[in-house]
Length: 410
Ligand SMILES: Nc1ncnc2c1ncn2[C@@H]1O[C@H](COP(=O)(O)OP(=O)(O)OP(=O)(O)O)[C@@H](O)[C@H]1O
Ligand SMILES: [Mg+2]
Image (cartoon, rainbow, N blue to C red; front, side, top):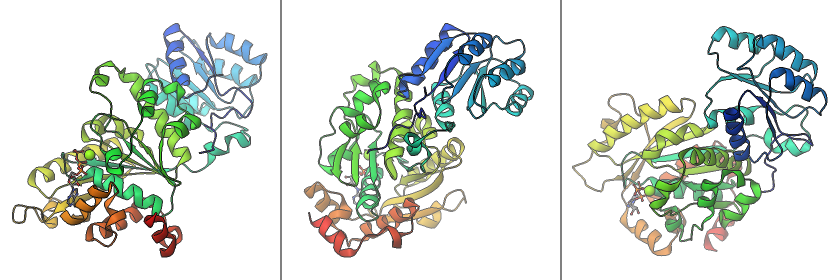
């Protein structure tokens, strides 16, 4: 993990924000702290005062102008444009929610207009999405393709979602040779660390409490290294944490984490509990895939349909696939794949059989099933799934069998 956080400075300040009031100033400061932009300027000033300041200082990598108090926003923007580089990306914020104004601002060269109050994640996403003009080599990381994100969500408890997340992540790293992160977003009851037989450490909790600390170095320190290509971020927080952690801080931290991790890993697999999917799935901006795991039960079908509908609404750009696990466990009481697909809203992409023997071997070894029972039917299905999720051509990414055998044997 050597890439810079990509604040877009290129020797310049990552951001100059001129805001209309103290509350907005505090809010923008929190967002810049979460982005680890320590040298961002956040100043309460009118657009006219902003012009004066900008005229006498180097142009920052990005500009944020609060037009709340402006009588003539377009004229103010023109004056600001006169004292900045033509190419400087600019976000305007304001209180007027009017499409006509929005269009005029875009035509005047504004990159985005956000209506106050602006949610922290929205502002952070808008700021980080702006390509910093004239960025030098330091910014290379922010221009490189973002790593793929995969969220694995169980339609019900105990259906096998962690098994799918851990095993596909392992395969992505060791079979497909992609630098992979596994992030357990079940902050209290997560079992990814248990499945890999490692201690999760306190790093994830520290990150969630203080988003301002999250950067590449921090990640490098707190992620558990499973192998050169495979890292884990997990927590086993005590239940008190739920009541003490501030919701806004948590959201900000997750946003910064996702952005920072995807700059450092080709692919990140999230074990995402269904109760958190509603609030967290929108963090997974493209390229992203969602995997809904269910058992072949009636209740599983009901909840898969409900969750699929919600996920398509919240993350319309993410590819959604449905995986049936534990198939054949209770023969006679299960729905067939075609019954799952009957109403036309769901297409099952993988069917994993219930297999006790490989599961017992995996638990006993403290290693993923695909690592200890490579030839099992379950492993074969999971390998196909991993290839599909990788977004790569298996033939290119797959290392030789010999290399794989040596790795798995170690
Ligand atoms: N195909 C399978 N065959 C046999 N056992 C399985 C299979 N898939 C999962 N299991 C077992 O089922 C149990 C639940 O699996 P897992 O923990 O992956 O589910 P989960 O959806 O993550 O559960 P939770 O809701 O607790 O997070 C585990 O003991 C796991 O080993
Ligand atoms: Mg689980």
